[in-house]
Length: 262
Image (cartoon, rainbow, N blue to C red):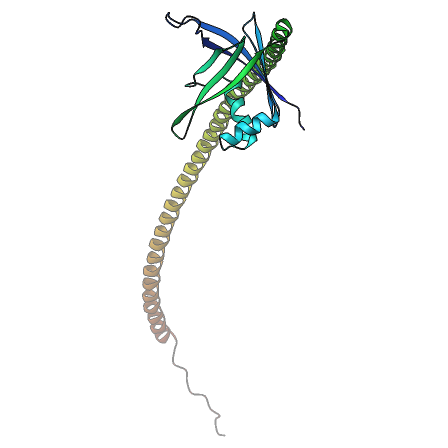
């Protein structure tokens, strides 16, 4: 069997001591100890105290009357006596002989139902009230410690978040500076490459123009040489003819040679 669960709730209960007058709210504290098949209640208004010990047999009988398993009955009772539920009407009325009847309402399948348990006067009001107050003090200490831990954790997270934010801003600035530096160098390299390309283009253009002029000069020279060669050939033929003629005139006719007969 596991450890029991403990709850404590403060309820504002309407006093029925003077029904003809406007009822005043009476604060009470209900401490519950919940076991798998039974539960115990300690109730105090600061002056008087009451107790309720719901045995396994009583819980089983109540659960069977409502057609519920025991575990479901315990869970539902803990839900309404562990935390005040909005819409539920709580009561703590006189049941005679200093007994009180604790009641609370709830809705099931559209029907409003009421559970009630009879509480007997405590045999020791001071002890019962002290037990409830001790539980509240312990719970308050635990909650305070939890709040301190949560606050410290939140502060640490805040510091870490600020560090992360500062680091992010630093990285963003470094990234921007790096990009500006890289872009600047890239522009310089690009401009240098453009200048070299323009220089090469100009050189190629000048070289192409020079080659074209050279080719035109070569063509003009070839045509001139062809014309000169044709003229030289004509002159050579004429001179050769003249030379041949001159030679015929200048050379005397040779006499025929032969042996004389004796």
